[in-house]
Length: 334
Image 1: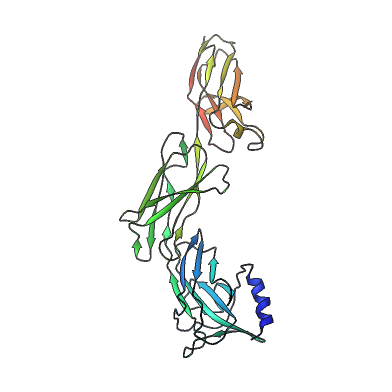
Image 2: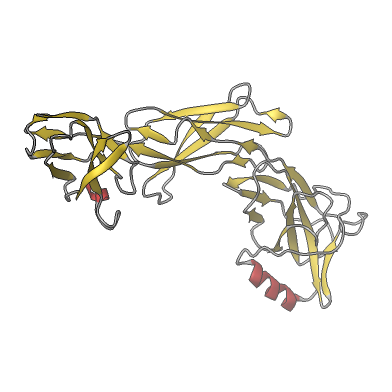
């Protein structure tokens, strides 16, 4: 055994580097060290095992994960070396949803010429001392809308399946992360029905992203993130009224709902605007104004004699909310 070679290699492994290797084919697998695998979060799986002391002397463990069970110690897609005295746990990340991964743990010996797999007495060369298949599950996610009005229900749903089909009565965690999407996820747990379907109702008040994951079997399953924007009800007051003489100045005023700080820099740069729109086959903006720091706005407009019709206030609402608008006001010009 070459201890200097061991120390140099383990120093690199301590940074959790994935080492893609190539080489010998796998042999008949056993699970002498009780290798087990569990879900470690989104796209992650954790392999753990017992210490091996029944076989020949060795320097380190080599743990591998691959979606092809025929790949041996030095041909696996994902490989990690772990010193024989280190914590016997390895986390593999960037896994693919719905994929079963085959995990192996080998005892290896470092020599001046390379790395050799040390097998138990009587086992064929290259035999792992631990083996387990981590079943992957396919978990889907969808929303009943991508743009929901504040106060209305948002339904997030999906389906969970495994190698044998639908996973009934399984626990699925649904997480949400609201604007500014800082990774502060909060979760609830829901249960699948007999067909593997799940759903949960939310009432978001600000733009929010959602994801789901499943951890009960094997490497589990996880979804992509889906983002839902939240539309607000903009209130508008019209003075002196909706029936005026031509040339009369009409004031449209109000306050954007939601957090007024989110309409200003640095959240939104430049500051959010509101626009007076008139309907003529489609809505088009006539005049715009910047929202004040307290969220209030004021737009003044003098309609001409031929400018009867429907008017509304519209805003892009910055980054935290969906584009929103007020109820239309019918303006009559005498």
